[in-house]
Image (cartoon, rainbow, N blue to C red; front, side, top):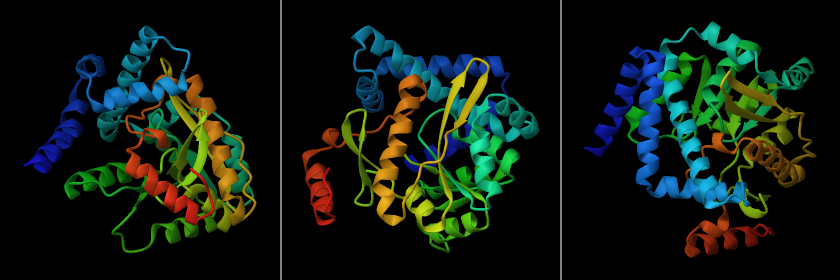
Amino acid sequence: MKDKLADLGYAAGWRLVRLMPEGLAKILFDRASDWVTGRGGEGVAQLRANLRRVVPRAGEAELDELVRLAMRSYARYWRESFRLPSADLDATYRNVARNVTGAENLDAALAEGRGAVLAVPHSGNYDMGGVWLVGHAGSLTTVVERLKPESVYRRFVEFRESLGFEVLPLTGGERNPAVVLAERLRENKVVVLLADRDLTAGGVPVTFFGRRTMMPAGPASLAATTGAALLPTGSWFTEDGWVVRVHPPVRVSGPSGVPSATQALADVFAADIAAHPTDWHMLQKLWIEDLPESRQRALRRVLERRGESA
């Protein structure tokens, strides 16, 4: 029953929200966001704890306001995503393109024929940035987690494919996604990967806002094995629309350079997030010290076997 309700909820979002006038949709999503924030709950509490690390000098009243605005930003992401299927994608591309900086870093990588890995955090609107990227570079390939229920996963895949994305499942696909991504990069195409959280045995330990966490090895590993450019990319909202910043490439000195390149990504992400904290949509535990002690011990054992430290 829970899975069915989730599926119906997403279906209603994509069908109903895009039929509303934009002004009405904004009012409803802002009010819903404020209501959720006022109720509190695990996700809101974790967001507050995360923002406390990002803005350590904030007092309680300032944190209240940061959380409220961050939840509204997260609601904006969903409102825009629900409305995108009926949007004029050419117009959306032009609107986003007005506020893109650093596109020359992507253009240089593609001009050299080596492809590009855009590593992004959970900030701004991933899908709006993707619409710009498809319009600018012609295509993008990305990987998505296989959500449950399967019907919700299929809805997200169909949604992103309608925007021109090539979407690969993280698990359960016909081919290993890492192999396909490497092929796309060798074809001088663009890969986009979320890169600010991976609390699994495969993650790379980094320092982020002064504390230890783990981030995915995939972006730097792909760059190391294919020669593609590794481009940290930020996204945030303004009253005038969406900002996308493609940063200069992070150097990856072969497979042995993956840890240092991942730390460099973390440093770039931290600078962007510190400047735009309310557009970072991290409602989950991120830092190792916040995990249950049993998870911390398990991660430490894995890292010790790899000769690393948490």
